[in-house]
Amino acid sequence: MLIKNISILSGDDLEYVPNTDIQIRNNRFKKIQPNIESKEESADCEGLLMIPGFINSHTHIGDSIGKDISLNGTVDEKIHPVFGAKSKILKNTSNEHLGNFMKNTCHSMLRKGITTFVDFREGGLEGAVLLKKILKDVPIRSIVLGRMEFYHDAKDIKRNSPFPSLDSSKLSTLLQKCDGIGVSGANENSTSVLNHYSKTSKIRAIHSAETKESTSKSKKITGKSETIRALSMKPDFLVHMTYASKSDLQMASRKTRGIVICPRANSSLAEGIPDIKLMQESGCLLALGTDNVMINSPDMFREMDFIWKVSMGLHKTRIDAKEILKMATVNGGKILNKEIGSIQSGKIADCIFLDKHALDLEPMHDPHASIVHRASESAIKAVMTGGKTIHGKL
Image (tube, rainbow, N blue to C red; front, side):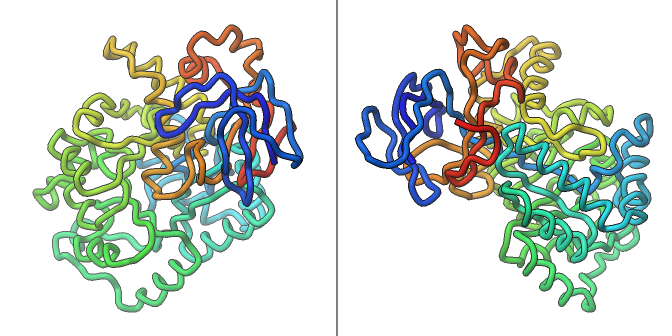
């Protein structure tokens, strides 16, 4: 396929190129240059801006069925993996019913330009298999991180209880069905168990330092920070880090590929927002996630706009719009170590086509700023995954 006369945000630095042609072959960007000559099917995209498809780097779409339940409860009352409202809802919902709502969320993400999502899937093997099943009918790219459904209490952690030998085969089977493992947190697992997970060969990720309570709990039980304990799992990336110290962030920058932050979800849970500036100063690569569908809509436009405005409101310092857009695209691809997230030769052709003349965008004096705090689903003309248009049309 040949796309003519398109504006793009090019490469890892999202450089604005006002007019070029793009040739797509075998699901990837092949050539990106002006005046490409070819007899293949072409589309004149004058007036459109192509940007990388959004990578929603942290979701829990299984709780799509529980939207806005327990709005005024505490964090634990809402989402604790053992006794929270979310876990009770998931346990008492049929797979058919749950699958329908998860599928709806996937379609919602596609229409909002999310071409890849990374899900921490609860429910053990059954939960992972259910999500994989519904994804067969949805053309969205997924990274499914499964979870073993057992949790340690403070006594188990102090005793450093080992990974249950009876569950070793269950873990192997789970990993065969998943892209990796997504652990609830260090406070639900002994160091021995975290070390066991560190030996798995696929993607490893874990929540860390999401709340003040969780950070103080770790120090009370073990004398160590929650993040230091989480790093014993040798995760590829950490999630949240809202209350991580500077030393924890510096350690994370050396020991992981990056951090996935979820500012709207943190705020919805009355847990503030991550210190993005400190994270950047500590050398951390940041990506964005929308977290629990139960408390938050899976919308990267909203996530970017929230960071853009709340950072200015709280700290009177604006985070550069291009850097925010990288969190939603380029950085997600790097943290996942996948060939997605940017428009350049050889990368997988996942992208969004925005109407530059959309009422909310024209005139577009600063493309990065316009996308971050003005664009919405209504500005999307089409969405493409792997070189195929899967929403809208050109």
